[in-house]
Length: 176
Length: 357
Image (cartoon, rainbow over all chains, first blue to last red; front, side, top):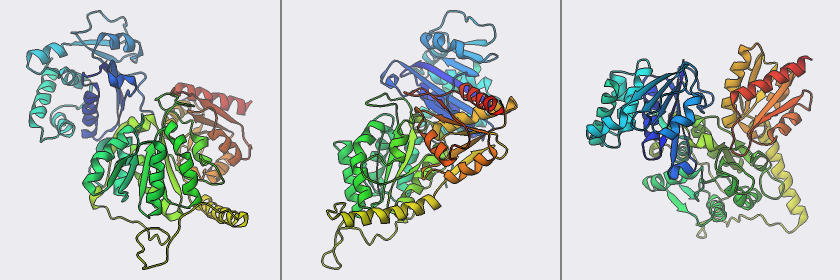
């Protein structure tokens, strides 16, 4: 099985970091993974995207053009990539930025109050990881020890505060 | 090998250089290669190495020229426009038979071009790049783990043949992360070969060595060229390297290297599901081109498809290798655009239809 994930949003929202965490989720499950960022002028501000593939077999193209899962962290990304989601796929979006209902009937829309949850829990800047937590529900077996193992690889343990905050955000996201 | 870590292709190359005993790196930033230089700027001082930020690409390759002449393992890296600037230095390195490693993380061209991935420097790489009769060995990794292992190999090949070895990659592979096993660079033995020809530090203890590419007597210059080409013949005979995927019963052979080869694999699966026996022949050495593998594949295949992010460059080596005995078609995108599996699959189906007709 292969799961192709596209994460898109503003530069500075932690799009690439979120992708890295999801890639480590795959690695912690002994799956093949790839992570490909946008590295154009976007890096200097504006939009940021990241394609992550988790697979049980060797990964061919690392480009995610038809995601099974899209995480839209802002409105421009929602509009830009809504059409690209594979039929039967899932579109997660941050309800702080996207109010409009989706236009497709062949995909599932899931509103996640990522920004709001992060801010009301004193986790400013970690809406990305709240979203990651919510999104884990679409990844079979991404629970229990896997969640923590992946976090340990993403955030070095010497940065204990960061680790705890990120874990809290993921846990909150899973509970949404 | 350690536990696998997620690492960018650019960083894997940098870490491999450390593991190979390279302690002299001369860098200059350019997208999409910059992480490589940035990584070594942090890492080199920790292993007692030299990271030197040159004032230009031309300066960096000439620092490599000097370091190589002194007999140390050395490397520089850039992306397409920067490689053009380094081409004069490549010619001098070849003229002096010096071992060096050069990385090209390709972007779209010509000119300043763009910063998105490309494979348009194939001719430049496989034909040497600079002036004069010479070759460099060109390795084309297909993923991050291979960027690590082939960069490591590049240093051994360079020393073994006293040649420049280029690792030719692109913006996709440089920027992507994959799970990669690396060695602990500090603990890796330095397997440098003895270099009795190297210059420096004689202090009257042995005869002086001179590293030079100037021969004003044509007969002498001819002799250096001829002996160098004897060496190249050996390299062509012994160093051809390739990988394959579903090639054994393939009637349509897709040829692609680097990032293109990964996309081609998806297309081959798709074509197989539609009943077309497609397979992949992936050159790992672009020079020497794996001619023998292509000649062998031509005996069974009905047609070839060259998948490139260039305007039809590798296709010439395919046609030469199979002596035009089978039709070869081109499937390509350029300028930073990347072919998608559907487009490659269509090219496979078309090649199959033509071959059947």
